[in-house]
Length: 435
Image (cartoon, rainbow, N blue to C red; front, side, top):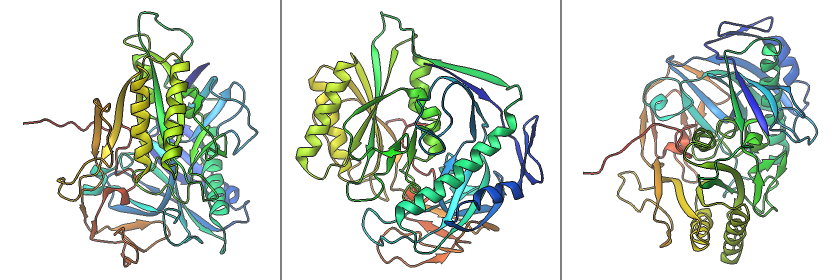
């Protein structure tokens, strides 16, 4: 499949009474977007605001971020299985509005009040030390502030939030439908260099077997019940893989924006036919509740990589806790089949960085790339402006933690309380040096 990503950089976002794009300046029709959101009766109220990098603004109640995109050539459309039928995507041309994101925030407490299934939200500072931590603070943000109808279960709340943000993102991107892009990038795996090794990306995805939504969907279908699945990397760019918006508001869960802009996918594409042949992506469901299940999924994934004639794999993941056992067993299973592996992961380490950095290990895990620590504390200053549904938030992660004023100052006990605060897939430019 050959996909062209046509780029329209955004340097200004204005709320107005029309849609237009010219020389980086994007104007969006506030009333039309609000009317689009209110078509869903599960949305009780909605508002729009713009957050600009460098301004002393704190966004609260964040559930997800998405980059506006529009498919202009080829079959299907953006977010297949969610905004339209399950038509295969990954070929043709898609417009992207780079440099900005639509941010979905929502006032929602959920029916599940404890455990791994509890709803999550996060904050984002557009300035100061919080901005330095997050990959999203440099983007212009069009913020949706949603208040959901009372009594919605988690799956209904997720669907309402996701549909609102995706409809808004697509409508914004429609502004560029008949315009010429600044540049076009082409993504095509059809040709290979037989002298180069075949390398795949194994993307491990934390899922929950006991919840309405598993955490990750493929064409709108939660992957909870699937074994390892081969997908084309171009499908990620067109929204075929999406998160659960009621629980994605944590620093180590990917947003829709992350799936659209997966740094390891782009990195492997950049090396394609130069130092390696990019052979595709395997989605692996992790966090089986028994060790038997973890062994089976590791074996299944390694067998699939072998069947795809992979000489080597990059393995990365999303989530936390015992799901990392599944990841390490996958490293082991691949190495035992002669497939060279490199694991890309964030570390733990505790507040002072002296605790064990990983939850589990195997002897075969000899090549690891660290993307930094999740556990370091952060001190955030007082903000001048709040955008979002919450004026009070919980910044500490333990059960029963008190709510504090969102205006700060705030002491964050782990960087996963900041949206984009954990570099899950190596998209940042951090480096370290041993002495």
